[in-house]
Image (tube, rainbow, N blue to C red; front, side):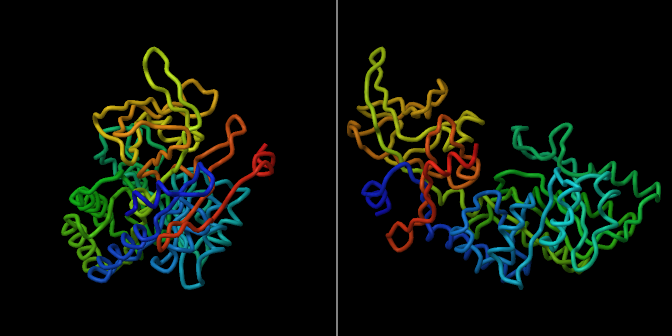
Length: 382
């Protein structure tokens, strides 16, 4: 069904499409888990932050997590007064900090220097926290590892413990701790191991908390083995009586996002078929950044018709990869990239003056336009 809907897309390409049903199913799945173990559920808007998409997600979450002043402002624009905003970033700027406090309900400072500079000016109702690097890596590719060597993300746990021992800092200012040390994991034993490591240090020095933000980095849904997740949150709530937050991002939108492109040129080079698309790796920037081949709907491991799918920019590396199809491509054929709903649209750019894809929400088998771009969009970015 979805196959035919996408291939019969009649609007101008390229176009990002978010499948509302897929997103809502994941949100409902997480909320079903939440009913059982009582945590607070934030959506990390850095994953994908089109305002129409945020409006779709809003009724299912307790708030949004952010990484910048602009994301905070957007979050507050969308959320109700009963919902909250969290922010942590390596890039707190003192020129913006007063505005950040205007929009943020929870601020997790990323370094000891940040803590010394900003903690004394954070006043209720804004809650002050710190980000801890538990120095526990589970990600094999260090490009995605928050605990990689020389990581900028959080205060290393060993440094935190040394600072406690010096007694030079008033830790009573801290209401909570933010931890994020994984990427696309489905192994919640890793979360359990991380939490016990961090809490053992806090117990040693009798540091009391009001909340703990476990960050993202996990693909949360009820089809996985979530018993370690449930056990960990129950243990935290029973032993420490604190609020526990989770803030998935890619888990919500990643598999729900598509890019529909069209073939605009076909030719052969050294007996290989080249299909030029009306899109570019600049519209799927992580394809180029991390050099991986995105999934294409209706492509096969092997078939009669092989094509090199390439982008339309003048960048020689604007390549998506080799793909096989049962039927030959022709001018106007639709190519649908799958699982591109996170960290793509938010990073896309207008290199070469190539327009950005329009943004649609697929809802009840209809494509609802959320955003389109034009020459003024290009000119205003320069």
